[in-house]
Length: 430
Image (cartoon, rainbow, N blue to C red; front, side):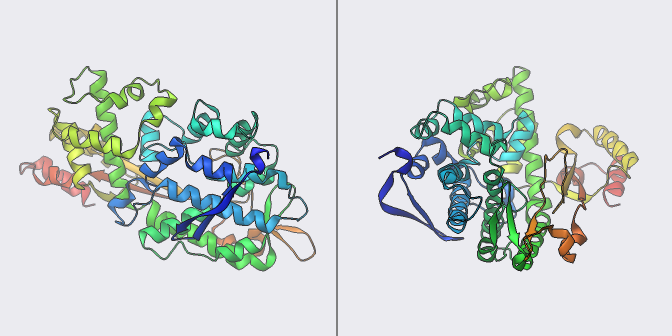
């Protein structure tokens, strides 16, 4: 029997708190789950530093990846036998769903920002490079890894397949909204996914939703909106991210200055040098980073020592609402005052901005193409969602941005009494 058709002797089942069960019958999927690169995802949290805010948010990218696979498996069951669905793409869809996040690094987005990395690029490298995942995929055929990489890069010729995994209503978002809501303990991220799956239909180049399912999609979009502002952009989580970013910047700068670390940060050398290999990248996970952070708490360098202590012990920066555009003069003055007080503003003062666009009709630009969600009307016509839904129309195309200023309250409180401390407090208290 050809490998792509090979089934397990007995179906394997993962117990899952969100989908109840994740079902695996294909030998290919089972073998991919068992690879070293996929197992590494157990050691990378799905929500980075969010566990500092919501203590239940300890779930991993392994959890989420299995969840996305399971949603795609269910969608394919619904699409079977329908026009525009080509069942020869089934295994490609399942593989891309399972592997879509395999390139994430520890504390994903902060890590990427500091070292100018792109997890999607690393995902493609893992799929097409010298890895166990690549060896498994090539058992289908030599071209299969490249096809999986193209689906994740959104360049695959079958746009329907791409839209199932990456669009404004896709398996990735449907899993992470529900999973993140479950593990953070909030109620915002819940919506009727079963209803949405039942009314999904394949077309030539995208998934559409039957008009009868419009209200379930409205609920999904509002869930996404709420989760971004209540969970993903939570200022306490962002404070931990700011400190994490500062730790990595400081360690990199010390390395460049020839600083002698008590324990050599060997795992970081290629990152600091800007020449990271696939092997080095895969050797990094959150356990490794936290090991170094704990050791760096005992370094001679006061800044690195202090930042690591703050991160490990959750002694985070305080924050205030602060728009740098309208308060630029105060920011310049605050930087000068911090310097006069002997506080290094490169590491202890940060303006952080968060922005989100909950739904858009169509847009080319920094976020790439955002194809609209189309409703399939009873007469067969396609109508863009916001033309039918007043709720979605109210938020469509509207980008919301939030600015915060982060600083160490304890440093300010411990300053000697005088004009500098008084003025710093005046600015910070608005």
